[in-house]
Length: 172
Ligand SMILES: [Fe+2]
Image 1: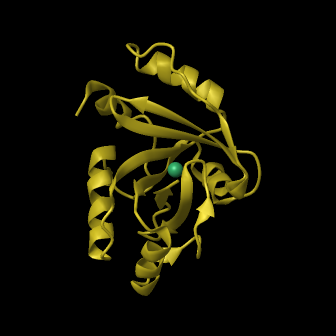
Image 2: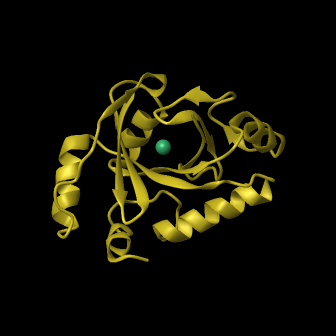
């Protein structure tokens, strides 16, 4: 793992009830999907809910020291009342999410502050995945995929009562 990601491992609280790093979390989530018969194409990103994208980008640049001039584009996603910005760090993506209205993103931020909200994996057929998770008794946030910033997306809560979410994304 790169030095950047080792450092990010302790940057935000992860609401799993245990002490677990980001990469370990990624492997655990991939295992969860496999157990439900869902084969992701690839891991997409870690979703971090924050109070301000601009101040968090500035904080990240300072925290990571060697990374300078982080370029981000802030995109409004009306389906979830949030702004999002993606940052590529050594080939893995970080998604910063700033809620502007009511949603489970905002509720998560109110409870835990700036923290890991979800892990996202690309899939070929989001609707089919939702059906498999639903059949397996997984708690779904979206019963049908919504239009996100990068394609069709849907969220679920794989490990209740832990408030960490799984996002599946079917690219455009
Ligand atoms: Fe996401």
